[in-house]
Amino acid sequence: MGCAMVQGLLRAGHAASDLVIVETSAERRAELTKLFAGIHIAADTPRCDEAIIAVKPADVATACARVVAAGARRVISIAAGVRIAAIQAACGADVRVIRAMPNTRAVVGLRLLLWLSLTLVTMRTEPGPARCCKASASS
Image 1 (cartoon, rainbow, N blue to C red):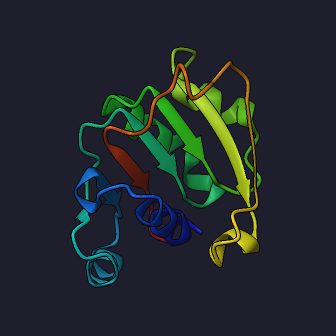
Image 2 (cartoon, helix red, strand yellow; image 1 turned 60 degrees about the horizontal axis):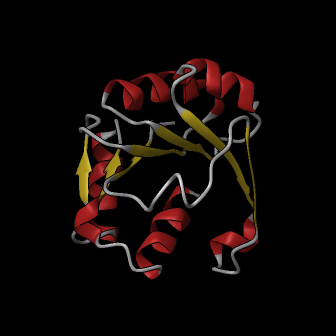
C-alpha cells in the first residue's frame, strides 16, 4: 500500500525530489531505488515536516517517534489495525495525526480512501507537502 501511495503522490504532481522513502532493510532499499527513480531512498529519517507511516502495526510507535524526532508536525498513518488514539499517543499531542484507511481500489488508482483525525485538519490549515517521508520498516 505504501508503494501505491508514493505512485499516487507522483501522479498528483509531487516532484520525486520532494519525496523520501525511509526503509530499514538494505535489500528493500535496493528494490525501491530501482522502482522509484529520482526519489531518495534512505536508511534513516531525514528532516521532514510531515510523514506517511506505512509499516506493520508493531512498528508504528517506533516509526512515529522517528518522524516526530525528524520534525514532522503532521503524520498520516495507513498502518492496518492501529487505533488513531495509539498513533496520536506515539506522536504526541502537538502533532496532527490522520488515520487513513485505503483499500485495494487505491492500489489500482481508483482513489477510495477513508480518513479521520482527532484534531481539526483542513487544506486551509494544512497546505500540501514541502517534504514528505514515507516511513517504512522491514518485515
